[in-house]
Amino acid sequence: MKTLKSFVTITSSLLLCLSVSATAFATPKNVGFDDVTAKKELAAKYANKFRPLSRSELDKRTDNVQHLLNELAVDVATGDKTIDEANHTLEAVDVYALKVPSDDGGLLSPFSVGSTDVTMNSVWITYDAQTRRWNASGGGYWNGTAWFTDNPGGWWGTKGETKNVGGLDSVGITYYNSSGYGTTSVVSSLGYVTDHNGWSVDLNNPSHGDGKNGVAFDFQDQMKLKSISGITPKASDFTYLGEGFAATITYDSGFSNYHGKARSMYAHTWSNTSINSIGFSGGAGNFGVTVSWANEGHSWLVFNNSDTSF
Image 1 (tube, rainbow, N blue to C red):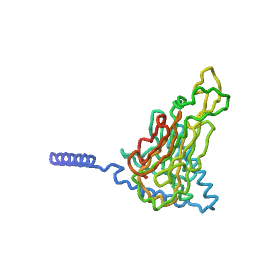
Image 2 (image 1 turned 45 degrees about the vertical axis):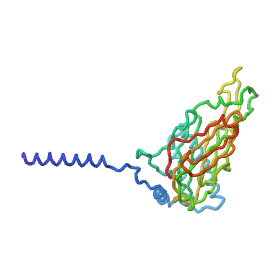
Image 3 (image 1 turned 120 degrees about the vertical axis):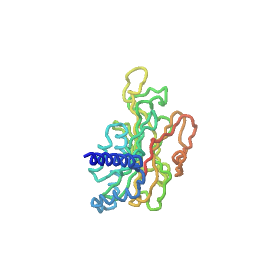
Image 4 (image 1 turned 90 degrees about the vertical axis):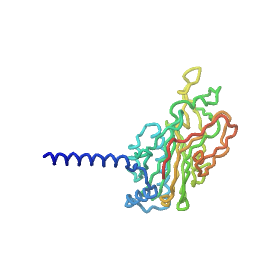
């Protein structure tokens, strides 16, 4: 009995040591993650969902998916929908999210804070199984009513009247440290801006970029007077076109071989500042984005605070 007990004790100790060693030297879940392989596996998994569509059907399908993705990007930023709810909505129409690991081995959630005033989404990579097209989406939302401090000032109009808030703003997606773009091409892209209360505008043509290193959509943010509640105007008297914003770029099936890092971006202006140009270089500095401002001083540029590998 003593010999058996000693053997069990020694064996248990050995197994414990092996367990500790395995834990100490275990490979993190995200080490060795191959985004190209992950995209190809996702496409293969849902290959049976493909539908041969006419050109008009294909274009209409892509327009609808882009619009849905932009709306969901804003809803997720505001907290109106969870990530799971958004994915459920997409999967119901055969659009599937690419599962991208974060630095801690968990799945990257398309939600992160980039500014005290604005909540920005991480870029969301999705696959439309019916068309074999890929989408990159991102955007954000104002956390509160800080936009009201950028109002034109000294303005008290009539109900329904609108005024511009500074120059154009811009929402987009930037890629950097990327390679393999020669295997794919941009199908189309769509920007979106909303007051999250029924006033929305689709932005059909990107103002900057060609999709290789990113795109950005300029839009004029506006305040609309909806009520007059007192002598001094306050934020609740207005609705703001620009409270939510998003962009989606759609690529053909060759996007599976294009890979790198991505972030969502938003440029805001007020007073007499405006955007001259936005350049996308693909370099690591400032996530590959350079903005030239006119009358710089009343503006800022913000990104979400985590990379999306694609």
